[in-house]
Amino acid sequence: MTNVLIVDDERNIRKAFAADVASAPDRYTLVDAIPGAESALPLCASGKVDLVIMDINTANYENGIEVSARIKRRWPGIRIIVTTSYSDLRTLEQARAAGVDSFWFKDYSEIELLEVMDLTMAGGSWYPQEKPPVPIGDTVLSALTEQQLDVLYALPDCISTAAIAEQLSISENTVKFHIRNLCNLTGCRSKASLLGLAQQTKLVIPVPKPGEHEKE
Image 1 (cartoon, one colour):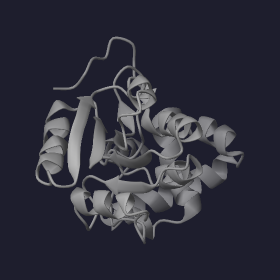
Image 2 (cartoon, helix red, strand yellow):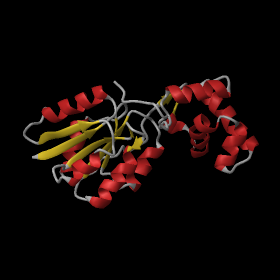
Image 3 (cartoon, rainbow, N blue to C red):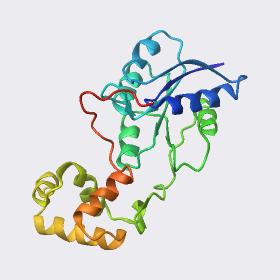
């Protein structure tokens, strides 16, 4: 029997994942379902956890990938599936670097979570074979170049072309060139509308702000 710990800041998602666990009582039992990644550490230390289903953006300012790396260093035998509703493609490599066993996009994966759980606990690993076809305006993220993606990822944090140029160590003219191309590809009329589209697409994992509480 595999003991499962669910970590997700959205209550409805925790309930849905718990239902997945309950649907296979011959293979899985639920240890707990909690909103914050840090709280997973003492539960893993108890020796009662075999599999963690870990959200990336969790409660209490905690990043699920960072905590997953700590779990893997201390308890390498615990299997981890990272999940996210965000479409930030950079998180795939971040999860690999953290030693995460499997990665499941909540909205864009072609297989069900229970299938990923079975594969992971059988000693396998599941990551998307290709970048998911995340729509952004008139195009999809996978159709963009790495340079265009870099600018698009930087936009929510930097906003100004000067700040983006400094962050990416490129010229402002290069930033403007990429923004024009991104607007043409996505159907946006301005940098402001491109920013709004990036936020609507849940492109970048947000940095939690003081005073934020668990989502209902």
